Amino acid sequence: MIALVTGASRGIGAASARRLAADGYTVLVHYCSAGEKAMQIAAETGGEAVQADLGDFAQIGRMAEDILRRYGKIDALVNNAGIALTGLYQDISDADALRLMTVDLGGAMHLTKRLLPQMLRQHSGVIVNVASVWGETGAACEVHYSAAKAGIIGFTKALAKEVGPSGIRVNCISPGVIDTDMNRMHDAETMQALAEETPLGRIGTPEDCAEVIAFLCSERAGFLTGQIIPVNGGFLI
Image (cartoon, rainbow, N blue to C red):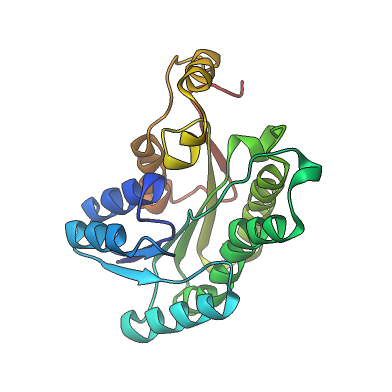
């Protein structure tokens, strides 16, 4: 079984690569610029590091073509990669806004498009997208990120309806506040406040998310598709 995890050099992606490898997958560890870290994860898991800037559709096409030429198929695709912007909506530059929307939403959609034909031919495959609690409820000063993640949720539901008859399952996890590099923009006081807002009283870990991703990639989730699974410790109840 072959799995491709995007943004797998750190955080949720790295934890998912490790967890899927433990389940027997050969994991392709995607990265954009953190090549050394990705290669370390690949060596640890017995997989391979693959590179593409998901903001560049030509690079996505090259990577997908290379993967299919060498491996023949992808059994599980985890669209995890993303970037964030923090600031007042009107203060975000057009270039930064376009970059975020292209990477976080467009990149996931285009990579899926390039790998989907092979899944359709084999009449099987699993796609797991990574959204965010902010895609469900919205976050002030993270408007573009919230919009992109809301798009991921809509993409998941629509594609699940379209490809379900072909034996392909498409699901999504929606993490709450997770201890990742992306959230290290917040100071300790803010993170403590977010933990206190979470009914389980703590910040989530990348491994919390990886466990759910691995479940969705397994036959244990064989009758689940089009679902948005919250991994948020009760943050949104």
